[in-house]
Image 1 (cartoon, rainbow, N blue to C red):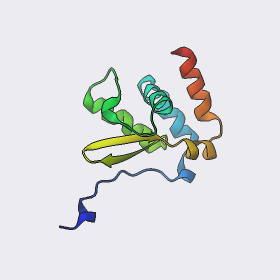
Image 2: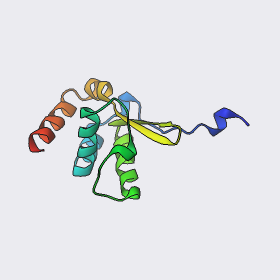
Image 3: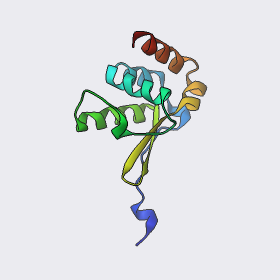
Length: 110
């Protein structure tokens, strides 16, 4: 069996394609801001199952997909787990200060 044919991956936008409108739209939802804050305050890569969110599994999956498609997070399979991490360097290069401002606001309100 071809190992490459069974490797699961996620599509992520290239750094140059991260758009302010998409990032701000993704961050408009409080559940997604919670995810981003936990990723910023925790280990570099975290399993989706480690997040305590007030939503069901399918909605949780949707929130992670929106963040990934906006370019806020990167996701990769690690065995059967999906690990997520913030794309901090890409976001800072593309939209300087946006992530820091959102995180500061979230931490002040927490």
